Image 1 (cartoon, one colour):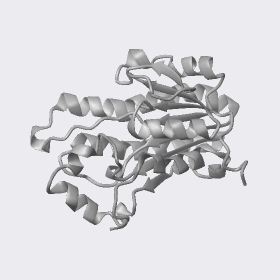
Image 2 (cartoon, helix red, strand yellow):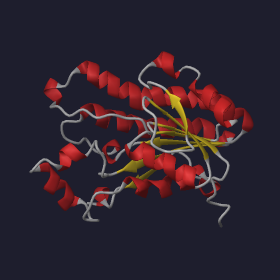
Image 3 (spheres, helix red, strand yellow):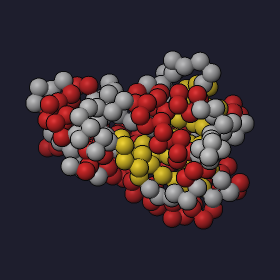
Length: 242
């Protein structure tokens, strides 16, 4: 059973792993024995993790990213695309350039890195790809049209890639966090109206902690999920059950 959930020695890349959910995921994989690289604009505050500077919004900067990770770690066994950003504004006033930037980071950059990783994973017949979606990949949210659209697209992309790659030994799945205790969520929770309303709807009665995603990531990165393809695993304190 221990081997079933083991990521010992696996080479993993976590995008956006310098803070928030990405940092918790990178730390979790590292402490579970994986060799971990983080791709972000700033270095993660974690010793032992390889830092690969990259502006993931920039296609030129992403070019050859997986090749650089393979050079550092010796392989690419696990790809976790967690990089993301948020912008709140009413839909009627939402800047289209911001909409495009958010979609680019969450979806286009993710697809780019999947293609890069696939060049190593598909010939080998093994690999684990994990996207970070959101409960807003199933809902519309309020004043977050770009984020919701991007996270819906992530769920669809995961299914599409699984249809093509499951039979070739590569697992493509996602996790969908609910409202977590991060910098991104803090302004919303500090809103005197929205904050209490959100908390009152979560059956668990609290925000999730970033570290509470690690178990889901370990499961999807390990042999325990060998027959799990195209799935989005919700980690939301029961939010979507209401």
